[in-house]
Length: 102
Image (cartoon, rainbow, N blue to C red; front, side, top):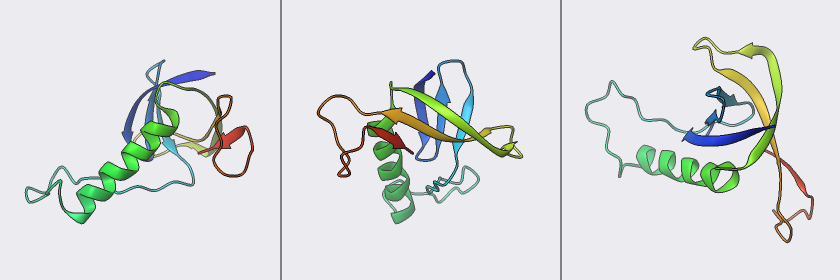
């Protein structure tokens, strides 16, 4: 098990061992650093912020375990994985289950 240290985007995490993980099955908007006209209050900026905040609320600081994809890495060297975590006592995402995949 690893602990999520940072949520970079809604679909990218950094774990406590420094490993960067691109979440499989999840896509979130990302600002284009090459665009000088990117506005954080634009629809794209708001979507990026909301997706990042959602993922932070789900996994920031939590212990997670991973199932790696095939291929296991993307072209940038990020690990491609499904991320799983357990909900705390009394928490639910509507289905009543205690194990969650993100």
